[in-house]
Image (cartoon, rainbow, N blue to C red):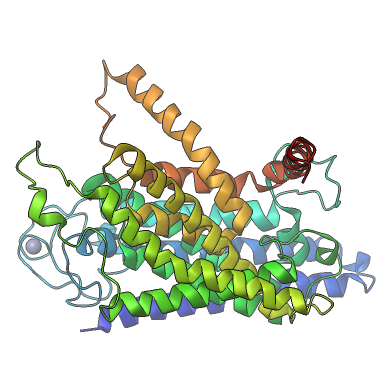
Length: 458
Ligand SMILES: [Zn+2]
């Protein structure tokens, strides 16, 4: 029964609705502040503090609900089960949980960690994940909106923490930026889920990555309909707007991707590695797939409509270069461009790696994962995530090597996905610092381009 989903949704709705209500309190308070309130003493500060505290509690509850759903996702998706039905039950005896026992964290405490029917212990992993996601959501809220940040456009004199926060969030305020913020929260939750599944089963389920991408696209489409606060107008938004021609490229390429996917689903194009199971036996470590290079050609054919339509889209947009696209279209195209750059970066590595080594390099799940990071955080963040995933994986290998005599970490077995997820979270938290490198990078590229032009006389 979708009763449980309804319960989750109800929890989500109640929390989102609740904290929206509360978080507008500070903005009401600031409007009141234009009135002389000195007579009221500290009551305004108290109101603001209470508002923020309640917002934090609501975000914790929201996170715990998402964490509760993640528990279902990381267990059921790899097992090929539906995440909707049946409702939660005891894994040992199949006893059904009541709605109170289903509450995140509280339910486990209520049962004192034991099944009501068979008295078998229920893993502490469930309340731990719920509480962890709840705490992460509340901390991200504090980090983005409450902690002392600096609001200057040039950066400078804030605390060291403020150098980690993109000032746009605080300037725009929660009430007018929650679609993008919720997309960021759910991206983090999705990264956690895909890390757990990838580390255990070596797959990144498309259900997770496509959900994250879909939420990112929806947020990019909704956000432009919110007013932009005066201070935020001067600041760089979380997803940087791309130029009109680039919008054309992004929209065209996504149209091409859609066509290629329809051709794939209808059987006109063939899936790559369709006969993989005929060659690779799980119980035979010597078996390997012999046609990896040939399958790469199949993937290039799949990508051709995307490239062609992207070029056509860019050309069409360049014909109207005088006029800017509508704001919401620019926002959607910027998110789509991030999706494409994220996906293209890893797919290029996959194609080159497979051609070079003659065996499948990097899973398509990693490609989808970086694409969803690009959709939610923008194309530069996708590139940074890829760049940071290299030092992150080296750091992990080094750490695993150092602690090997004491703890056995899965040193060779850990796939790329968890490293990508960790790098994406680093990118999210270091956005302002990473953006300060952008001009340097642009200089390096333009110097290289100038050198190339002089050398070739182009
Ligand atoms: Zn039981």
